[in-house]
Length: 81
Image (cartoon, rainbow, N blue to C red; front, side):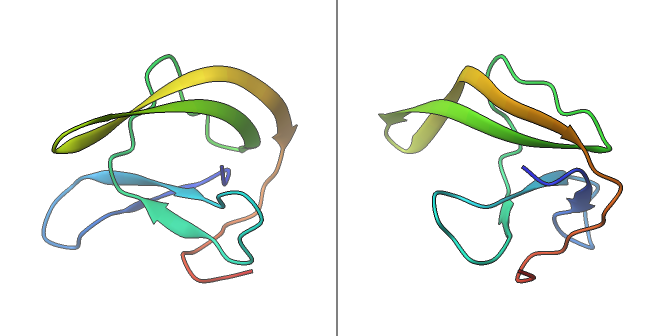
């Protein structure tokens, strides 16, 4: 999880988290922005263990464990390494 968030859509005020899943090379948007049991704190990069539950038509995410929380003052954008 990147230390910063971005607006999901210029026409709305929804905030998106920026994530790298597994061994992904680049950052991507996590548009739902909700992981049950997780509160994002700007300025920290997180490595999380989450549980995904598929309940049509949505996927629910739940925090299993915060594996790492590291101070990071960087600004990351979707598509960047």
